[in-house]
Length: 335
Figure 1 (cartoon, rainbow, N blue to C red):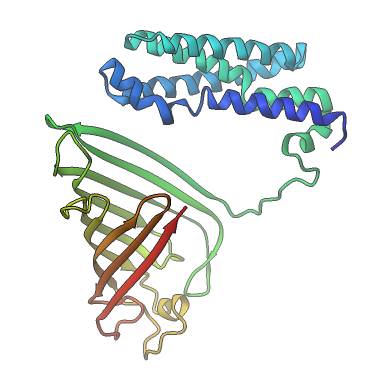
Figure 2: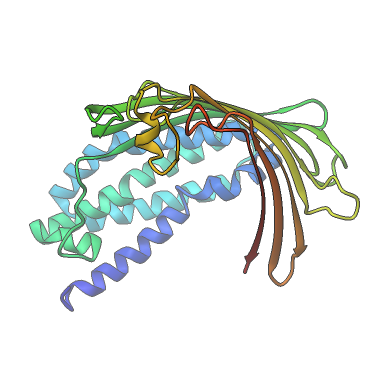
């Protein structure tokens, strides 16, 4: 990195940090307060934010051509003005239409001023030498051919007069590359999907704190022959602040069932150190657990002690293994 490039890198890095903080990352902090002030669901805020991301993506090619024509200084300056206007309008928002208009302006500002535009400006200044300026490295990172891709969508809601929160989502994933199976053959990649949900069932002190009982459920599936588990179902209950005088403590109980790889050699492949006459996995495994976590110290640092009892009636590592019991104690400190 030359001394001539350092001022540009510092200036661009600083302005990019401010631009991302005042646009893309705003909903993470302000979505709930804005929704509360407007008296609407936070889904409206995230819907407007999603629309702004679409606008930003659609503007990308045009912004790149404009940078090629006139350079990055004018385009990035317009971005700053547009983001400022969007933030000002967001501050005066009093209804959903004004909220949407504010996020549309922010979307235009993001299209004109975030990574794509910034890197495009560096490319016009430095040409092929811009790669090191963008990353701070002149020997760029290398990624092999094995990639894990993930896509997920979710929805949240509130139930009843107490507004008990709930959440559900589904996702799909894909793993590329040649994956070794227990039969010592290769499969070309793997795919799967999953779903999850949770719901606050009961408040111990409605309107005062979140203590109460939460239910959750999860499901996953893959047809991969290289995976140890091909199907999974889990559900349980979590209690927070249920013990009198212990508002920060939590407890829970859960059950999980998994269908395992059916290859006759899967046991030896995934768990080679288990002593058994069989080389296969059991068809399925069932696990149940109960736990209690106590917060002993909360300030100036947090000390947590958790204990759990786990019962596995059908250990999956081999078909002939007896039931297993485990008692664990964990101590954690957060500073």
